[in-house]
Image (tube, rainbow, N blue to C red):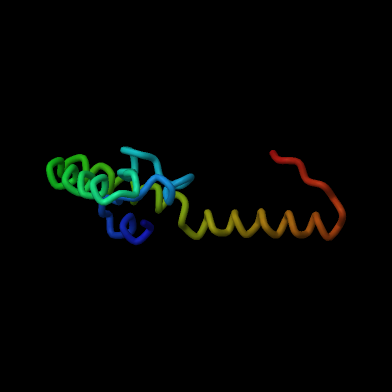
Length: 95
């Protein structure tokens, strides 16, 4: 999925694999994990190229927002803060 977004291609995924990262008909097309549903999803993207381009663009935007060096640094900072607090015996509350 991330590779698809990075290449700015529409992503089709099954519902079980999607939560909580993908949003149906916003950044991806979610289908039930059956051959017929996957086939219908592929056909929809072939029949509606503008819809596919919208999914691809939104997916790429989401990837750039969530998977960049600043976002990674914030995630590492949060992990380090939690670990440091645990070692010090401090219970953190969510902000």
